[in-house]
Length: 137
Image (cartoon, helix red, strand yellow):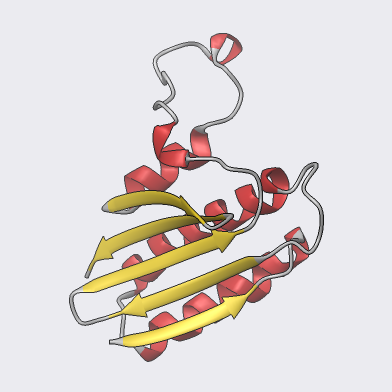
């Protein structure tokens, strides 16, 4: 199993660097293009959510770390931050049958992550949030 780790500054301008790194790691492990696209999409959403929502009112320094574990059978990523406690796995799925003007804003990114990944897990330990995303290869 190959393991990789990247620290990401809590700025949206870091997202292209994150995606280039994920693509390089996945490419080095021979992941198919379709699978690479799905995991990059989910990680972009997860890290963007942390950048945009986790640190309001939280004193610095702010930490975002992304870990990848890629084996022949499983892609696993962990997004670790020291922001506010938030469990994205507890957010209900949006009601996509409602007209747009009746929907509550937000929640579509988490819905997207659930749909492109096989499993999402969340834990909060020692002041850190960890969101684990898994996709069977």
